[in-house]
Length: 128
Image (cartoon, rainbow, N blue to C red; front, side):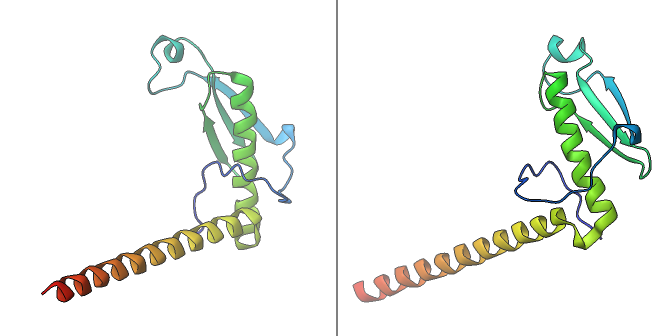
């Protein structure tokens, strides 16, 4: 029922639950996907597991282990916050607001398309 969330990166004034390092299990594995030798020979993909909730996050967005560690922790923090707070989570509220904006934008685009269509029809009628 709750939306799954990728890295939102909009960390305005969220009051997310803090993660302690004792609750985390961290592994470094080989990443997958494009990249050839840079991907196949280095263990720069970070897998983080939050032990109390069992949530696992895999991050291989950059070639830097340190950046991947940071990004993985941000993503995990958002997911854990969403897991424990549910609909009261700022992450959930931000996701819902973004969905609402997207729907509104689609609606406006559809209205504009209809207006253009009517305008062209009116021009055709005037020519005849």
